[in-house]
Length: 465
Image (spheres, one colour):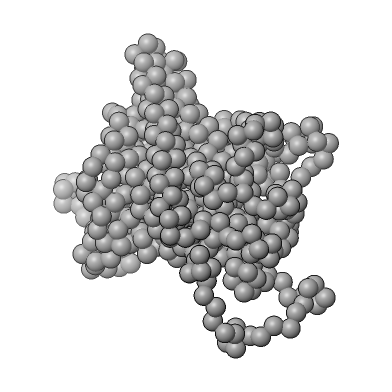
């Protein structure tokens, strides 16, 4: 029988139809929606639980609420203009053209770089944008005026995050030159770390007594939030290939391996230097491992991600007068900016040519890592040097852009609203900010107060400036 005459019928469940066109891979779409949900769970409830537990009791509600508000606000910004600024038609080499991502005609097209609908891609990338600004909030907990935060989130998503995303992931300047940023070491972590540190400078510090003594109000819940963050990272790195393929499998395994190594490295250094293990230290080591692995998902990063950020946070930060002047309660600069930069640079060293081909479907514009270029001779070594140059240039661009834009946003908001809460409100915390407290325990400062429905409305402090 001639091969051209051979045919077979697909099972009815696999036959293309109006809801499942020929270009749609149902397995990839299912995996991508799962990954998007994993990344969303890192923020809600992951970081909500983590932030609400790691701060002292009087800031539990405010810290958790900043994360919840940012998640909701980021979604509106993303679908109304942010997604197409990040992945749409080019407006400038640094930005796409703003437009909505809500029409049926747009959402039901084939998505970028995979066999999934645009709707799935929009939701997946939204989860990345949301967690970035929530991570940034970790530098501002315990004193930022919530009304200023309400304005800060959409402004920062619009003028900072979308620029980084388009430049490195969209069709922007660095993407065209082949920068390697697998899942957001630069776009997410360097951005959030640098922007958070910059915003913390403009907002100002917490009360002196809060900086000196700020014990977590519930360490067990800190571990719960950290656990959601860790397991949610399967969606972070596993979803980046936009397919349920071998690269996704390798990325997930490498992610958890690197994280475990980083956690144990941080724990070991704590025990060697301070003679005591620390739960919070272990969580920090976990985070640096997750962040460092994000740009490249390679196994050799764990030891360095558990040691270099440990040094900058536990040693350099305490010795540097500059670091001491900026109040970064959760050390976001060290756990995200430093670890993200480390991951990006190591990706430029250890980017394996065969993995680059599988992930990007081409290697024309992606040079081998410096290490593999050295093994393959002078020509490849020069390509490796070029790749390393792009990795360094991309990091410098993201850092500089976030310093400048975040400063402009903070200065702009401060012209209308105080960035920092009033001194008297800072002494009280959640009750002053929201009229609510995290724990209603008998004998724990219990007061007879009216319900919110019977309270007389009071103008917020921003209206009484």
